[in-house]
Image 1: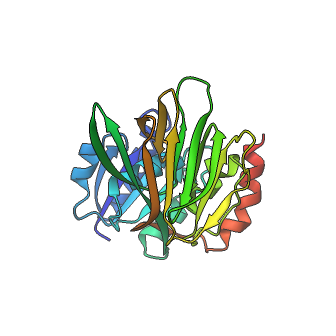
Image 2: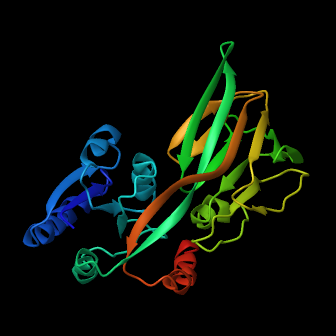
Image 3: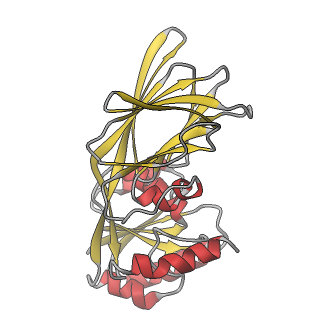
Length: 279
């Protein structure tokens, strides 16, 4: 390992002290380093070439931003948790012992499946198509007006249901501990490549979440009289209009983490993290 980046949450008051501490550790080990806000997409992108590891300072949201910028680039991420639950993070603040273990090459690579989404809609008489990749989830939801929308869900072209709801989401295994869990979905093994299709607060509709193989193609068609919203990993937000289609499938891209805890730690820590979430 020769070059380590630090991508941080720019609004967290604990960041400056931790950057100073971690920078000293990296310097003492002769490692080249850079520091950048995880919100600064352009600048962070410039720093990636030659980087062997990215340390994130923040919560899961900071990791999701970095994963979005990486876009499947196999630079591994190790998260230092400054958030609440930290399902994706690995190290607590000031835990230099575990940080040194990571830098010494004692960790293992955890590769997580991603989603690929294609949005097609007519805007000002022109058909527009946009593509995205997500680590957590793709969410089609109502906009600012508190009125339910209708989402027709198709799997491999066959209509599954018409949800009259606040929306519908497609989640990866990684996202199954996030919004998908709050919407009533199951928790998937983090190594799973399966996807979840879940309605959000459905009104007189099929309420059960569906677990789908990653070879499935999920198409969500919107019917609404008011603008709705498409959310990619909770931080890319686009306005949606009546008749648009969002098609989601398993992505060939992966997000890679460098971890020190053994794989079974995910289950060992699950109960305590969910307990903290209810307090």
